[in-house]
Length: 267
Image 1 (cartoon, one colour):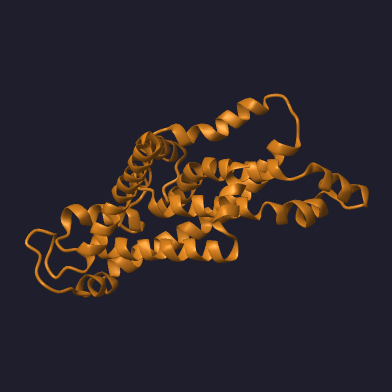
Image 2 (cartoon, one colour; image 1 turned 45 degrees about the vertical axis):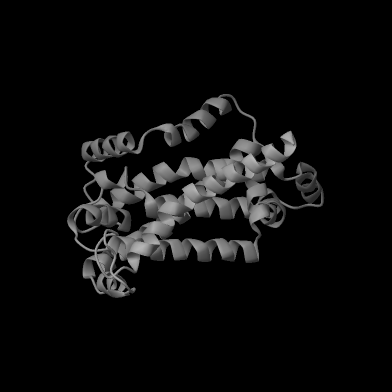
């Protein structure tokens, strides 16, 4: 009897946890298709007006362009640095490695507002005025710790005897890395890419200090629209972002496998 009660309570807890996680997302999707603004006294029927309205907005087009450019550049830089850093941390013994580990991971624990203000003051001090360059450097700094965290476990999981065997057969360090190590850490690389690109696209706490009118990423535009723009455009944009996330998850499941991806993170 006790086991049955515990099972029912566990299932109820799981149900409410899932509902709590999904409720805000489902509410935003619902609002995106409403004919009127907000959810009070909803009108009958649904509309695509909010989607067509923001898709035809040049401000939105500019924000998407800035966001995509940032995601590509920040993703490429952060993944490359994470790959090299992870390799050094897992393949070489040197004094102070623990301290370097802590320094590389520390920014992930610092509030975004503090990082944004610090970066703004630093860039002003060194004379870096270009907002887009500031955004690139700032987003690399905030995404890099998460990239390193996600890729190091994949390096650790690689059987070192395979690397030794490759070098014994005459392979160079570079050939061993590209031919043996790199194929085995693909889940970690994918996890790294998902983390750093997601942070680049969604970060607002740090980015708001570095953006200006000419270089406004989508996250900052959404933040401003929720307070000054009447209408449900922000909900429509959020719905498209949710759809894009679902597509990414399905693609990962099809070509890599979510279990393998998660396994690469926690091995």
